Amino acid sequence: MVRQISLSRQEKSLLKLARKAARKAYAPYSSFKVGAALRTTSGHIYSGCNVEDVSFPLGTCAERNAIAAAVREEGAKMKVAEIAIAAFKQSKHASVAPCGGCRQAIYEFGSMTKVIFLDGRRNVRKMLIGELLPEAFRF
Ligand code: THU
Image 1 (cartoon, rainbow, N blue to C red):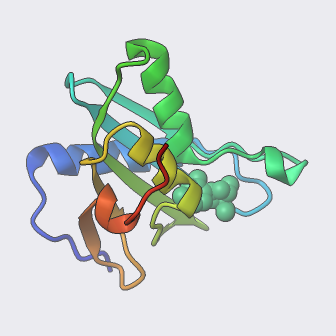
Image 2: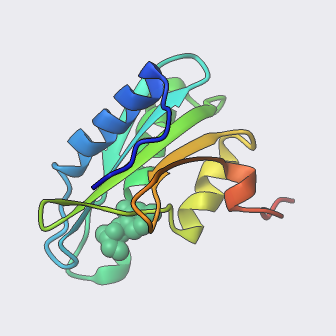
Image 3: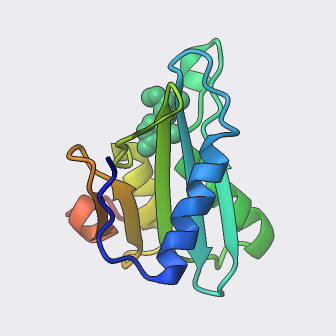
């Protein structure tokens, strides 16, 4: 069971888009399909999924692919207001907090970004990127 805390309509729809993206993932090696959907501060929405490779380190995470799509459209000034992440393992909802590398990548495009994800207890969580990655690396 997935317990949904009070999410706004906008947050719910972002999570739905993350699930839609996850269904498209290319994850033949892990069978862990991840999707991310983000809303930029200009109000547009972009999504991405994980794309694995037989040469494992070449695989890319859903969050970073969504960020790449957003930068591609909005350019270097793009900022992420919120990002939702969803995952499926054997077609079942799976918990997924963003990996460490993706936390840094999200932080790069907004130190106040809200992150929505399903935690290990199967609760939908909303956290600020600064809570997920305290003392993020910066120059
Ligand atoms: N993965 C993501 O897409 N995002 C994360 O934050 C965690 C991990 C992907 C990478 C790999 O394709 C699969 O999940 C299993 O690690």
